[in-house]
Length: 299
Image: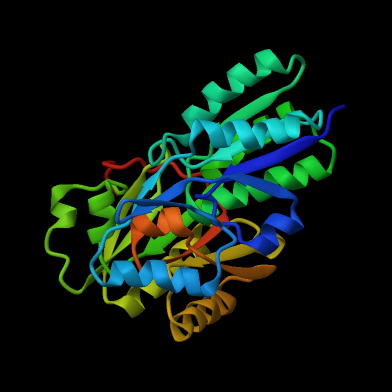
């Protein structure tokens, strides 16, 4: 059986330590600021994190691009030349066209590399929710599972990722067109903090509103506590857009006190997702009940 390489993209928000621990590679997207394109590296430094989010705090906008065809060619060929099969897990197609570009590229390469397999999976998630699926795939690859077996397993887990994110405002998400919600939801947000989830179709959906930042922390932890399954066997992930240390400690302590998880792991929301969601967003993720809510459904 051929070895399998797990590849993701810049939306997965896996840091250098996680990429190395699980032997994961990624295809780079690009950020665009003042007409200059910059590779969206997940291995960015603290100073680079602060720089990106401070640009947005100053009211300026950073835009993004999907993974270029040439980048897919580069990273796919690297492992095909090593006689490896590939499972690429990409950002939700509702937020990025990368997974579709990856699929088209993969079809061409499989004609060139006869006998090779490349699976391109729409994760239906973004940020560390996507990253969690990538880690699961990497574990399966480490166990010697085939590319097809990994593909089937990840497809079955996509809607088991439970995401609960709170933001100070929906301004960045609205500008980027990355969140779905009714006109009524977007109106009258004075002092109210939105809660964002990844819905069953892969949309980032404005799910509910909570009064005040502290209450939004209480809400996202309570929602994960209600939905998570077998927390003692898994890591709960916290991802944030350059929040301050006090807020991170507050949320981490709340998770520790309320959810008996095996571990808590904190990462930055990376440059691509960060450019869309804006500074000071923060959320919690875990595997749990199947996500069935679709944007527009009655709650």
